[in-house]
Length: 156
Image 1 (cartoon, helix red, strand yellow):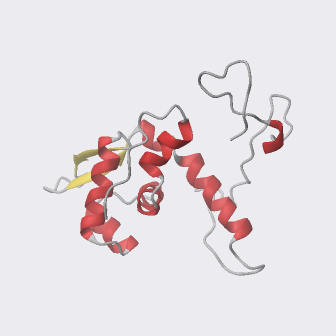
Image 2 (image 1 turned 60 degrees about the vertical axis):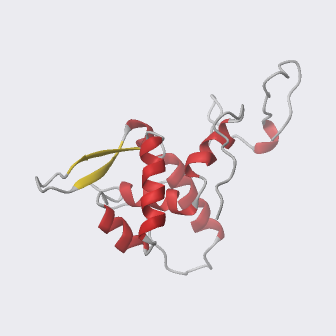
């Protein structure tokens, strides 16, 4: 399958972000990294993804600065993939995707994994975008001011 045109030069932050993490495997790799997975074989076993696809996505995520390749934490000759500060910044994205999935893709009462606080064991409260005064932000209340269109704004 041919690679799609890069969006790395797009003036849209969403387009640039999806250029890196807009693929299911990339997001699932990042999700698993937040769960403590660090080694190629563990990613492969947990995801059930073909080695060539996993290798490609990990290389892309390393090139994008989402992961660093580091020596194995147990002192063996292996290498591990460690989230960078940029990668750790994806945590709210993963949590919001999780919460959207919980709310929209499971039948009432259908079991699913739950994100909990490591210390208390309590489920993490739903994330929400809020105005400075604490009110929830609604999509209809926002516009995107596109490059070159500082006078007007277009929703996108």
